[in-house]
Image (cartoon, rainbow, N blue to C red; front, side):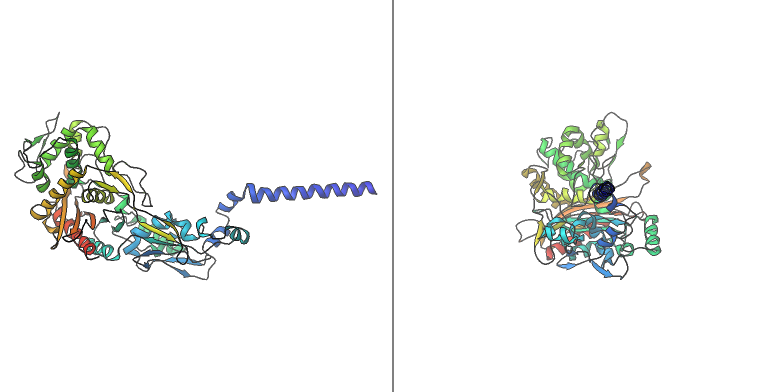
Length: 485
């Protein structure tokens, strides 16, 4: 009898060991895989069991949470959805997250470890603290001015504070209401499919995720390269460039859209946007010199975050001289995001320094305890301070007596540069109107804002779309809001 009891005891021990091993397998070895499995609803139920933290603009939340009393209890709401969609992105129970909702998901959802003042307590209770709030750098009046200025046309606006890199406005148009994607069910699926199918691509954030040929707005970068390299030492001296200009190594003649560009100076070329002079200047600087300057402004940077990822602006690293000449006037394969061109204007306004752009000022736990804060930091030095001062004067001439007159603001010093990017075979593509600028009150120590505006208008008569006419008034409205601030 004792022998059978002993065998039964060993069998029980073996079963206990098997149970323990299986528990270790499930809770330790395979816990992550099981937790992330689409078939496991527990993580989704826990994620939406509490209200999500808010995104704050100008001291007020531009997001909220709605109690649905369903299994996935709290849905995201967006009281001013289309206005702030390029800032917030969406948080969807079906399609995930985007933009700030994605980049700051841990803080907003309450899973960021920094939100836990007592980490062990939450580990034991298997709960999570309330979601934190994300305080943005956006100024409501400037966001509204940019949104109203675009008026539903395809395009984008990016505005920066030159001295800090704070993003004061970020608008992409046409926009959409992120709230239609928040929940689950057929209505959400239909809304997603509709937005994906729209020709205007409202889900694309044109300010940071779309690149455009910058056209003549890029001439500020070329001018900076020429002055820094010593190719041009006197901005008012004639440069000897003929009109039209024969592209090096080709039989192609590059014309101008304006008169008076033959043997013009750099100052005149910037003021009246002479293609011939700026293409010649870029070719004289050379590929290595141009690459050094464009890289310092931020072109070709694949690591830029604001905190969302920014599509890199492009300047080819291998080109023939004729291609370099075209690239130097914002054509060929040169492309830029509106944010990148706002960084160009900000560098001129801030004495040649590009401050790292950022959209999030700080993240706070429920209440007032800040768990993270973004401090202004230098991104790169784009040009010498003396070069920046010269370019400030040239950009002021553009506004005071040049192609950017529509951006002038009484009581303020305004610098600008227009651009009209024609592209495609025989310039048959949609024309893009650009305007980059900065503004400083007459009684202020430093510029208050740098702005980039791009307007796509497939319906416009090709000869009637221009940076000065289509984009400059929008930039002026944004700058006026900044100066009032």
